[in-house]
Image (cartoon, rainbow, N blue to C red):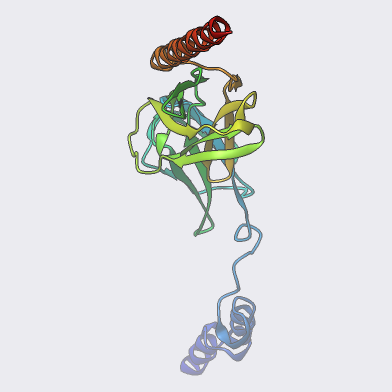
Length: 272
């Protein structure tokens, strides 16, 4: 009897009883998805946007700029900035980071901002352009020599020179245009353009202007000179000397012809 009672007690306390096993199986079924796979992660943090502001910024050579990188991620895991420009201070707040870029001298630079959220990394890109509008555009008074006007235009303190186009206009007509894309200097520069314009009768009194244009991938910067008028008489020293010599020769010829005519007239009168 004692052995039978002990056996009944062990059967009641055993963990492999059908009732206990069924409860554990039910709990196990609740903790797994269909087919025994883990539940899908939440998509609320995986779908997010990244914004960098401003997306385009123009600064003078050597200037600085602040860029703000923000996102819609509720809990960003990290933010970074990739650029060849020199970085300064960094400020941050909820869902945003602001970066300072110093001494911008490359005429165009791409800056990339990246944010990681729920294991996924997304980014945005901004473009920084450094340029300097010409300090002045000056057209010298035209000089006439040998049947040509010499036009000389000065464009001062401009950057980048490689994106500069200098144009001469007579009235509303383009008479000459030159692109300076062969120049690759990363410094402010002065440019002088010289052009010889053949003189035509219809040019007298026409206004001539010089125009400087920077075309920076869609950003167009224009500067112009004050107009200069092509005068009817624009004598150079050599032209003046030639004119005086020609007039003196003509006066001499007329004087000789007058004396000869007078002498002939007097001779005829004396024969009567």
